[in-house]
Length: 364
Ligand code: COD
Ligand code: ZN
Image (cartoon, rainbow, N blue to C red; front, side):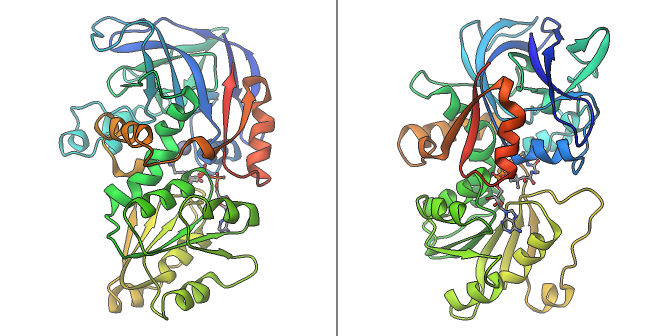
């Protein structure tokens, strides 16, 4: 089957034929129907986030079950599924304490399936699976444990986005923190994930939702998803502007949704006394953000990380599906571009060059 393989950081992915083994016990074989173009894959392509290479990236996916491995009882061929980018084993300490998004077994076997081997090969050389998912390919072998059935009225592109940016973004405002009615919120980075943080804050009835980005197009787009104010941080000081908007206080919650030390520091500085900065983005490995530790203490600020919106994928993804079906969240207008797998490098170039909204691969 055809896949996009990343062999070297900083180089384009190679679209080529690779071999995919049949599913083993507890795995399902999926025909990929949609795969989102998320910045987290770009972090890997640039070497800012590390993965064993060569690797098939793609962690925002939905597909149709083609076959099942031994012991799989919850899925059958023909089922439409969302494949979460964290498969929670259900047995480790993190899973058993309700933190399936942080599954220890998933983390310890990064790049591989749960048994420590790969199903992807090229001429007897193994190829790794990003997030046990690797959906930048025509087909995938994935663990069955966290997959979620998608009703027929949810299109596959929208389903794929629920697999990452929707759940990551909305979960940050509802699970990592609980934005309360009337709270003020700033969102730094208004791309696929940031727009969903904005939707989440809007769902929670935040009074002011301040979108901050360096791209005017992204800011305009954000206003259509619930942002009440927009700040271009290339042109204005975002900290001062947010203070002006909030009567000199700063915001109750700031969400960093880009991934750099500068934006992490901005998120911390923009919150009011007693406020919380939630960091969703991953800055490049080994970089350190300079946090004002005096105001951390004297102003009782909180600095909090958020991974997969602190959700339990197999429980919370069905809730996201229902919110989409009942019109509470808008995924349709978030999808601005569709691509073929053959054009994946162009899709990432578009993301890097500031195309707004979410791109999705829908032709394989
Ligand atoms: N200040 C403000 N905004 C900025 C800046 C800046 N200095 N630089 C860029 N931006 C804006 C861009 O213009 C763009 O609008 C937005 O930030 C980023 O949007 P996208 O669509 O490119 O990125 P997303 O939404 O797909 O991804 C954002 C993440 C924060 C999830 C990603 O970058 C990341 O850090 N991922 C690692 C964390 C992780 O693995 N999460 C789980 C899987 S997503
Ligand atoms: Zn993602």
